[in-house]
Length: 165
Image (cartoon, rainbow, N blue to C red; front, side, top):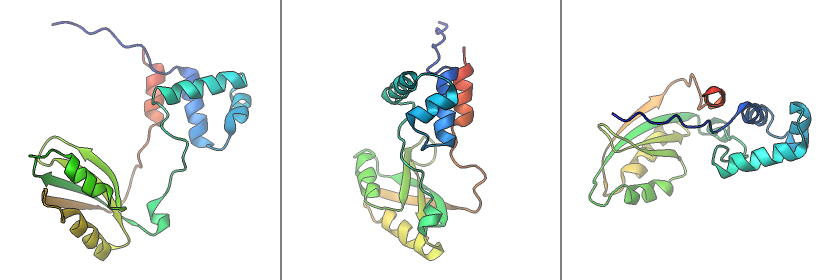
């Protein structure tokens, strides 16, 4: 069996500190970050540009809370689809539904897992009806999230990536 060569780290300690700083204080700006980290402004800008080009940092957009917008109900829905035409027809259908926040192709019992939101349980029924109103969707199985114990996080992953050898 061939042993694969270890990959070089994608980020280093300074990159991790820069990502952490912008995660904690998104409006700090390049100058503020350079002062906080004790490095040149050009270094901060070059690092940010490189991290964006590599896709490590996807966006500086604000994080929106669906509950604060009036959508306090979150659910995960597993979809089984007719696969003759692939996933794209269903994905296109789901993209037209504003309450669909995420779409993931999966292995296992279902074909897609989606995260959806609704204003209340009755509205969740409406959203699910809209989702399954597609000839390519065979079945949907939905679980309502009662309590979110951990939102999507990346800080521990960034830290681990910076320390990987």
